[in-house]
Image (cartoon, rainbow, N blue to C red; front, side, top):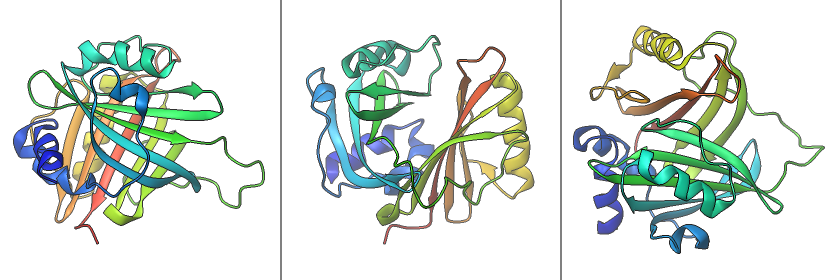
Length: 226
């Protein structure tokens, strides 16, 4: 637990990360061996759901900044390296029969937090489609997936919007502030952290594969862990 809290306090900035530390408590589950072999220190493991389907989540701490480690992490998982030097990003791909989502966040100076979500391909006859959480939604946002960690009351959602990252980030900032959220720390080029009462939300904006579009990622925690 001490190791977990130490890593989480480093995410984004010390002041901002304290607000998100409750999301990533060690709950048990399987590890992502390929990230361990390239120097990752597992700080969190849990079962989760992605678009209503079972999934697993593992968080790792790495030395080096996200810009320095993103390509190595991608290659270790067999995912095409990102074509961006963003300081926070989400990359997706496949490994065998698994679908992979890797969220890469800054953890203070020269540190990286990598959150790996592994899921099986969705069932063709799944009962429900992914839904947008109780958060502001940018105009024309196309929802990609949602992941839920019930035990920590956390939700991860990603979508694409037809505007460049800077424009998308400004739109999200305006929507969040209008909904009563406030910045919890100075934003970076790719990452902004917001707080509203007992809720926290990290928002990433990065170039999408489609020119002129942006991938928006939101990580929300509601209140305290159960």
